Image (cartoon, rainbow, N blue to C red; front, side, top):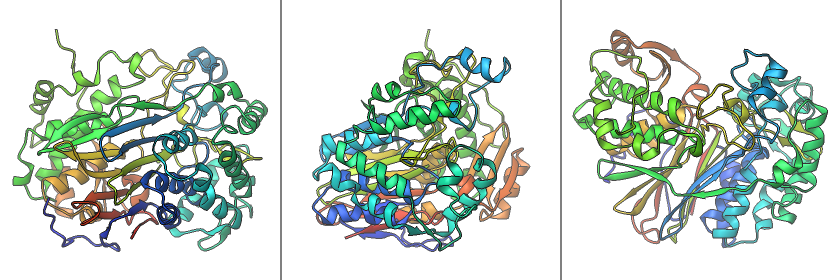
Length: 536
């Protein structure tokens, strides 16, 4: 790909060119990964160290109670890892209806009854054991140091921390851990998290054993029982991350890879399969026709994803059926270039997260994402070890269907890493954070790169839109008024938003420029967060 390295958008960032790269949404996370590479580690070592550090420096997005997913190129082939956790054994629709009423549609948004078994720590262990070079304990060193000594809170993280305080301050353990002055920290104020340092040491020494069935799991069981939850140490002991084969969709001579369901990555693949029926490159990149077409394709993709996707064993259709080329071509014909539509699901049957990426000069590339969901997740923080617990259980339904809650079952998941290849060879590891913005961001940035030749940083900086539901979309205030007005004229219910972090996600990108030992990589980090791409 011959990128245009001019950038038509207002930006505080420039592309990074290096042979060894780590890109995350916080500089200290990126530097933690780079330390491992300078120590002789590979991209997997770097990604694990960065992920551990990110649980400390961006607690508004993830923690030691997160889930995670990964797609990686090991130098020869592509691998996928699903480290999303399942429901406690006690969870059934009846369990929730007894506690929250017969009309309850989902598990609660916050509190211990939103907490599924966290998989992030298991992902670190699985990746290290299979692909890492350095001892696992070494990978925890930067995160332990940061948690123990503290760090100065940056601008974007502080804004989200303060915004979450009113809702979460009454949740068990939250105020003691995250409001040490009786309030959120201010920008530039030192925040220390010594309880998490204790957990990280235990995880390092036991290679995760303390977390899954050991002292940490036992502490969480006790904390849960004290606060109305039912998750147990046995739920933790029974957990194991799963190696999976990524699913894929061809687009413009390239192939986009995503983790298969229970995640929403298939939505990006469906949208691209629909867009492949159109000549996007013949339309102005930021014009209303191009943006309308992408929005309608994404709406069609979500209609099927929300209807059909759940734990694979519970789905009534397969990913292959949902990605069938003739089916997607038929769905594409539903798009009206002059009118926004509210699409329903088709019939394919025949008859709120941190993302990071790392790549090294030996060709290994890692696309990794972990999240507590909805910011601080459940809001519950086990005090002895500082485990900030996710609220992925809120993603279950209590009604019959692919995503109905059941013991041990994994919920529908929003966090998705992405990977791009061409002719079986690696091209780019990337991701865009932010709830249902993630497949939308995967699609929008990839279209900019493949259809319009924009370089990764420009594609990252460009104004985004976000589909919500029905005809409702949000657009960034940086979008040209003519385009926003043109979308409204076609029936889109347009809400112009100034808060880019909240509504439009943030991305990290590493594009392979050629031979990693010669040309290396081109990397980008989204200005919508405090992040940084670093390398040597």
